Structure formats: C-alpha cells, structure tokens
Length: 312
Ligand SMILES: Cc1cc2nc3c(=O)[nH]c(=O)nc-3n(C[C@H](O)[C@H](O)[C@H](O)COP(=O)(O)O)c2cc1C
Ligand SMILES: Nc1ncnc2c1ncn2[C@@H]1O[C@H](COP(=O)(O)OP(=O)(O)O)[C@@H](O)[C@H]1O
Image 1 (tube, helix red, strand yellow):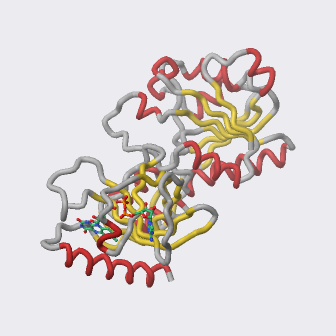
Image 2 (cartoon, helix red, strand yellow):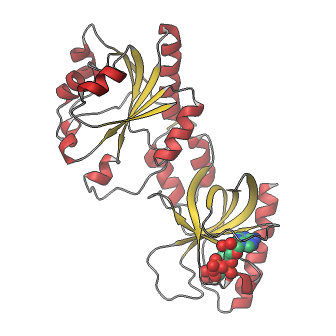
C-alpha cells in the first residue's frame, strides 16, 4: 500500500500523479472497527469488479483534535495503525488529507469539485452517516448530486452486533469502563497501544516485578486505570504479561498522567529505548492504594496468576 499526503488545494502535480479511475472509501475511520471494515471491504469488492485500484481517504489530524472540541479523547488508531490495518485489507493507496482550520472551512461543494472529481474517483464508498465539508453540511445526497455522471456513490448501512450499532464512541466508552470484551468484539481485534520503554522509578525490580514503563507514541484513547492481561510484541517476539495503567497511589499522592507499565512473564532483558506494542486482552481489576508494599507485591503476584490463566 502506498501512503499519499494531500493538502488542500491539491497541486496539479499531485493530481497528475494520483488522478486516475479508482474506487475510494472516504471517512475518518478512527478505530477501523467492524463498521469501518464493512465500508472498506465494500470498496475493495467494487474496485475488483470495476478492475481499478482501491483507495481510502482519511483526514489527519482528527478534526476533533484540530477544532479543540471538548470531547476529543485521543485516537483508537493513530496513523501507523491505520496504515497497517488498511494494508492488510488489500487497500492500494491511502490518502491522508491534512485537516487544519482552513480545511475545516472548505465547503462540501469544493470538497467534491476540487478534490474528489479531479482525483477521478469513479465510485465513492461511504458509511451511512458520513458528513463532510464546512460544519458537516455535506452528506451522501450531496455526493450524488454533485458527483453526477462522473462519480457514483455507494452508501454502506450501519453494521450491528447484538442489535447494537458498532461505533467509535461506543468502543471508547467500553475502554473507559474496562469493558474490554465489548471493545475487542466491536474492533474485531484487541485494542493495542504502542510506546517506547523509558526509565521509571527503578522500584519494580526491587519488589520482584520489573516493569517496562512506556511513553506512548501517540495520543491514544486511554483505557480505564487498572490492571490488564496483555500480549506484548518486543523485538520480534510476542510475550505475555500484566500491565498497570495508573498513578501508583500506593506511592504517590497526586499524579496527573497515568503511566503504562508492563511486567513481562519469563523475561529478563534490558529493553530501555525499545518500541513495544501492547495488546490489551482482559481487564483484571481497578488500581488501588495499598497500605503496605507487601500487600501490593502479593496482589501483583495474584494478578500475574490471573493473567496467565486468562491468556491460556
Ligand atoms: C500488575 C501490576 C499491578 C499493579 N497494581 C498497582 C496498584 O493497584 N496500586 C499501585 O499503587 N501500584 C500498582 N502497580 C504499580 C507498582 O506500584 C509499580 O509497578 C512499582 O511501583 C514500580 O514502579 P517503577 O517501574 O516506576 O519502578 C502495579 C503494577 C503491576 C505490574
Ligand atoms: N520481566 C520484565 N518485564 C519488564 N521489564 C523488564 C523485565 N525484566 C527486565 N526488564 C527491564 O527492566 C526495566 C524495569 O525495571 P524497573 O526496576 O521496573 O525499572 P524502571 O522503574 O526504570 O521501569 C524495564 O524497562 C526493562 O528494561
């Protein structure tokens, strides 16, 4: 898959290079959950039928981040994750359209006539609730009207599981309440974060549970504070472990940002500075303040046993 960064207005050079008959799925697609996957799969299927390449157009940074809307909570899938997942789904080209204040003012009409049509998108595939252009005034009918003969539009209906519509906001809520089972089911995979191992307070090894402290690579959606059974990719190998997301109330009075620390089972290597991908498989318990370090140590031992059982 090729990734192409676009910014409005598109230059002639870019249009010359990328303007071609194609089927394009358009959307924010944060999370690339089962609903998004059904839109992308439709685009792949139509592209195969029409014998043209399939592309995905997304916006970055997240409009909510740029517009400083109060309800911005971070990414379920930052760009690197989107790239990985879309490449796996057979997408040929990923267009990343730079979203900034100026772009937010582009009208729905201009979005179609200055971007979609010059790129020669012959079929646009969108989710049923796709909105675009200034104040989200554009929707599927706008696409149909202005696309006319040159661009057909395919709308994909809501994807439901157990009678509920799968949405990024329901997945965020599930992560923020420790309902990992639902989050994973709706995502179609386990939620994961990526980070780099950095120095902690060097206490872990003294209590028998060294923990790799992660500095997250992106502004991920932060799952609820507590203990998780995880699988972690360190170097080339997947390993099992337990992760604590929290502020370590046993040792600290008030800390604003939670830390992410992973104790890996059967592992004894120095990995400071290394990248680690952590998949969250089960939520075990909330973080607590213990009245003694010994109690904390006993509890972490129990957490590790629980995690081993859960991970099989
Ligand atoms: C599985 C696990 C569970 C933990 N649970 C708690 C907890 O409930 N309360 C707490 O204050 N700290 C908890 N911690 C964090 C420990 O306090 C922390 O790992 C230890 O202080 C080492 O910190 P360091 O890596 O910065 O040296 C937990 C850590 C792990 C690995
Ligand atoms: N089983 C393990 N799980 C996680 N990290 C480990 C493990 N064994 C060794 N390490 C290394 O030790 C470091 C954690 O030790 P710790 O005493 O908790 O120090 P820090 O406070 O700097 O995180 C990790 O960053 C990693 O480099």
